[in-house]
Image (cartoon, rainbow, N blue to C red):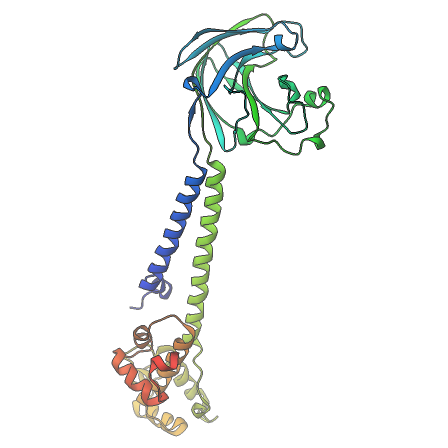
Length: 372
């Protein structure tokens, strides 16, 4: 029973070594990439580097209110109440660097655990410092990026990827007399404030209580994972693609044995001659192949095979079979990555030593010399 040739190719030791080398390369690449992208987790509730403060539109002349009810290193509870006085009243908390410098949100996400008494909406806003624009403490003079998240009654766990913040509200362009062309993209390394506040859709004059039990900046590796998956997939597709091409090339070798001019048959007995030629070309790799097998296949006496071969090429069946095998071996030696031992068995010889002996008799060179 013959093995699947493609399966046989992929089971070769040489292929396994190359595949393991590619997998090792990909693993090292992934580990190194993750190492260089690794972000330190920042627990904002218990951080000396960051401050968490209440804020409201009172900063801009409004009347909304926000104040802490309780605060520990593990949780913050605060109340907020929107009041009339501004077109878009706001109140909530924000976090910033304790030394008032800018900080980076590049490849970070915010993990927020918040408990509320009724279903509502929270707005998350990032105030981004941009060179050439106001550097005053008035937050709305910074370009800002805004998202609104629904929260359900009870405890909510939110993961907020900052890489998804891409939109500046229209009113900001109007208030600051800027156009979209003035803001090409936001600099995630120059953030002044990040705020969490009640959405403007909340009822005016209604007090709300918020309890935050987790507020952390953690690494966001989704973009890195996507790049590594695409890179690894591309490398593996190229690896297997190259080997499929090599396999097909080696497969064609076995199907396209070239005979020298000495083996051109005369036109008479063309049909039987052609069948002999085809059968030997397709079965030379069978180390047990004998003239009787060919005779039985063609339904002719065994002596007839010998007569035709003697008449047409001046050789016995065994000699012609060896010439065919050596022609195939020459192609393998020049066009494949098989070892000499593998080629010996693939071309029908019982051992590498018998292959070397016959090859040297017919080619006047050892297989290794011919290959090089």
